[in-house]
Length: 196
Image 1 (spheres, rainbow, N blue to C red):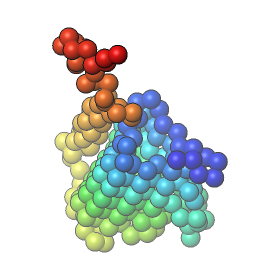
Image 2 (cartoon, rainbow, N blue to C red):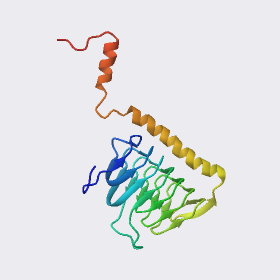
Image 3 (cartoon, rainbow, N blue to C red):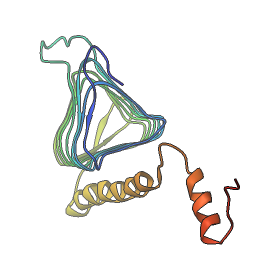
């Protein structure tokens, strides 16, 4: 949806579910996906969703008018990032290769560095920093462990898997209905559906 004269940008291979709301100054990179019931609201500042990143069902991504740090209140989501269902991100920076578990909250002004896994239900308080190569969880977020090579490979593999699922949904979605498919089936079976 266009807002304040700015229309969201998406590439041809970006999947945006029909029930998702992508509003205003939002950029979706190649092969990214915005799933069912997601709200991405770029009304106060810009939002960027990186290459092969995904916002799963019922996520909310928004921005605030200003940050206490005086940095721009944008929301940046890097490449190969998976945001779990029901999560909330507000004017934060999430670097590349990150998994944010379901129903997590990343507060405004926060930074999640690359190669990080946040366990489901994690709350990252406003203006916090999660260092690279670590697993965090809890409310408020606390360090759990360092990631090994298998964990890091899982982050990219998860993003690739969701991208493949998104492609299946994208090619099946017909924005104007599928009634014509029934007519084609009738025509192939030799039934003349149109009598005149």
